Length: 127
Image (cartoon, one colour):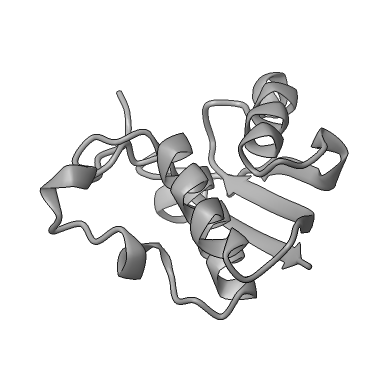
């Protein structure tokens, strides 16, 4: 059981990349890492996040904060949230205190509620 995608299909990290790129006015993950490029097939989204941060660092200084929400019935995110925060913060040269990861369910509604998929949204503030 898992998600399907061109890369590793990590919806949270893809949302984080999009939030950072959006805060910089630099498009989205598909612009920089297109799914028709075979070099991104099965790539770790932490690598995509690191490459996204390299793109951003050419014009911006630092992450101010990042807030992300995962929408899923399972797996439960709470047991992993702290380690996720640490990994994301490390990749972005930030403190874990600048990163917030939370989750919610869809209470049985829609494709998320039926455990047919997962979604994530994130917002980032950069300096």
